[in-house]
Image: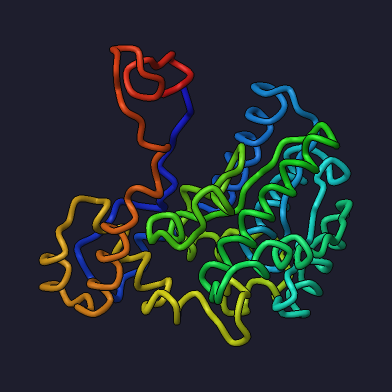
Length: 290
């Protein structure tokens, strides 16, 4: 069974919308634990000696790559930059800077021909559909490159994105292993800073990089700091009404809870009809499946 530990620095104090100490983690302990998790999961449990990862130029993929480089060896971490024609050229520069700093092999694959080859036959797909197609093409490429290299795909989605449904189902949230899935975005920033990731990657506004000027926080309608605090307390058993009464902004609460409730299905495996008592993923669970 998967080993767990409480990464919080100290027990959560009372409700306070200005107190983000509840999100503080012991960065050194978390770093060592995630490195060991990756080493065990990739090399010991699955028998792989190398991984592939998509480097977007953002802090999440940079942190995942850094953890993998420490868990394995830098030369075993194959970084792929997969820009689309609307991607900001600075994102590619930042991705190169990360790979250079980590000493990992890297390769750029332009996904525009694959994405546009499909979308050109569609009528006005819009930015949302284009983004989803691009995300799924990227993951398909990573799995194919992994097959060619005999490597395992490692993911980059953080807990905030996953809880808010801000990802593409079977796209960027479909890796074999994800070291960041239980870290809120603010915790990713803290760990990335502690591990010495380039400031150009840590300090820039997070973005899906589909439309010029687009940012995650504008799309979500709430800052990651506020969303993380709300999500933390909701997961800790508090109700939205309790949080609003304690002073948490009602608009932020609505933005977070609406996304949390509407995207529950995205955090589960495909729903299947049960015809027996041994349905896989429902009743038929070996210890390793829990």
